[in-house]
Amino acid sequence: MESLTNRALAVDRSPMTFAEKIYIPALLKGLSITLGHVFKKKATINYPEETRPFSPVFRGLHVLNRDEEGREKCTACGLCALACPAEAITMEAAERLPGEEHLYREEKYAAKYEINMLRCIFCGFCEEACPKDAIYMSETVMPSNYTRDYFVYKKQDMLLTDEQVKQKRLKLQKG
Amino acid sequence: MSEQQLFKVTIDNITIEVAPGTSILEAARKVGGAVAPPTMCYYSKLEGSGGKCRTCLVEVSKGSEKDPRPMPKLVASCRTTVMDGMEVKNITSEKVPDARAGVTEFLLLNHPLDCPVCDQAGECHLQDLGYEHGREGTRTEFPRRTFAPEDIGPYIQLHMNRCILCYRCVYTAEQLTEKREHGVLDRGDHSRISTCIQNALDNEFIGNVIDVCPVGALTDKTFRFKNRVWFTKPLEAHRNCSNPKCCGEVRLWMRGAEVFRVTARKDEWGEVATASNGTTGWICNECRFEKKETKDWVIEGPSNINRHSVIAQGHYAGTVGSAGKSEKLIDKVIGKEPLYTLDIHQVSEVNQPNVHLDRIAGPAHSDDFKQ
Image (cartoon, rainbow over all chains, first blue to last red; front, side, top):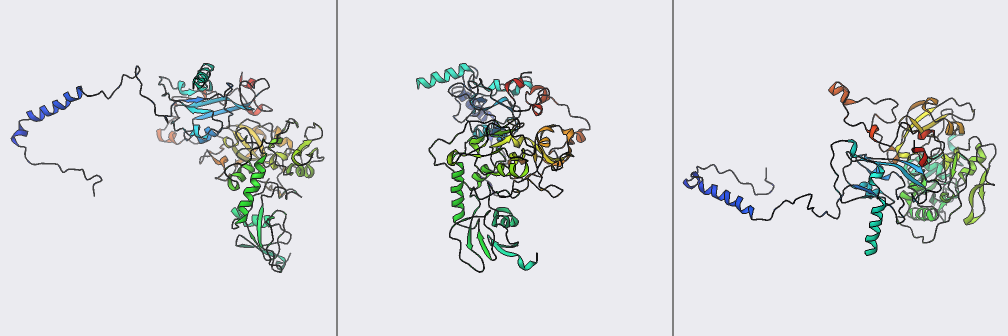
């Protein structure tokens, strides 16, 4: 079979020379490589104190967005659940009652909205499918936990809080 | 009728013989497949329907054997009868796709873009039409025509904004119910489906207007916002209906063991199918709105859904609408019930056992979940 890279070398099975037999030069060579790495830049970071920048297309934990007036954008159309290849998303819709207009943007809203993070593969299809720009994937890695119950994320776990909306607005005002 | 009297008609280079008086559309439907033009207002089961929406436009390249001149303009195939030796171009025509895209654009001029909220999404003919024959973008810059919401009773939800004025529901009420209580009021841009004045539609068989409506203008209030159609599993079922005019053969739309919606069975053209007794399978209001339990019905099996339809999503082989527990393969392999490390129903708030969405008369509200 033709090799893929043309970099493969045949194993040299000829008897070792005297210099190779005494091992010391090879040992020193190896030690010098090890010692050289002490003075090089570290490949690792001290994780909790330092973090690496996220890629702009990073797909992390889901966020359910609110509009400018703080109302929930999600209208429970089910397109995220339809697009989800892992079938992680489930929801139940309800009709907005008179007097709830400040809570929900549309006539219909998601009364229940759940993502099973054990199933989720963070492909981002839900974000792409959403016609209302309601679901986003944030720059947060999925936290770990000892129990499985923890990973069924409810609507309240993903919805932007009032505090977050305020901060978002401040950020926008500053430009 | 003897065979000499049949007319030979060629549609998209496929020649068939049909009886005189057949419309081009019916002839094309006999050929079947993509040759059949789309229809928004024509409904073969309703007399007098058709001729309003113009989506079924076709090109007649040869009028007949005796008069082979082509027809000067595109014709509405639901309203034009075939002639002997007629040649019709539908998908092979150059003019038809452009004209149909234009018609679609007109239909969508005032149609709201609320498919995420609309219960018809997934089985909407206008969605299909826009997807298959429409243009990608919109050119209209003007606000869409809107109407004040109108309550037409506990069973049927009217969204006049979504209506395309196909008149199908008017014919349904005229031909199926004892007394028609709704119709098209006003003229031109103001014309709207309405009752005069603030009437509730509660005639027997009036529920069939939901099935004939090609868009989401008339939807089932008992199913309103309960679930998306493609997450419910359609089952064919029947019951002995006391109403002699009702065939009792329906399609149940289930979530688990809950009946979320009952509709008539549909054929390949999206119309109410012919029942086993030979009549059109219209169903009465009792079957449609009041029998929402599996014990009311004799279940025949899962419905045959076109695999290109979104409703066919998530229907895995062997588990489609099966009433009981499906046979688990892993049981046989390990010889015992598998041990679940997480029972999702203990954690999940969706589909809780104490919330019965199927028993709520209208759409669910925030207080229905606070139990």
